[in-house]
Image 1 (cartoon, rainbow, N blue to C red):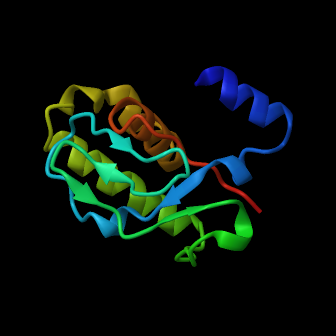
Image 2: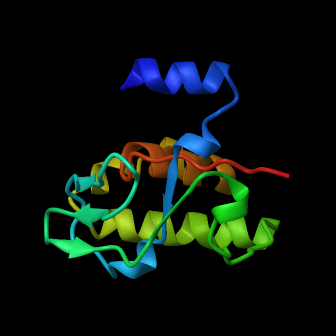
Length: 128
């Protein structure tokens, strides 16, 4: 799997070989556990397995087949609100120990990035 990712990265072919899924298709997930999504070799029939739910559609093949995404201007106010929400949600979860005094002293961008990585095991990409 990592070999395929590296090959596609080096060949600038990640987008045509990836699928995009709309998380709103399956609704809220009520815990912070790991959840697996599988799909067939053609990138179709994506299914969340922890509570079996199917995504309505998988989008693959690059930008021309991508869904229309909600556009959100990434302003200082947006990052501040996101950071505050992540801190609040983390304090209310089993990951509360991740909200350290050092984290609280960080900038909103740092707080969001750290919590996205530590708690949600994701990162964000800000693209032009």
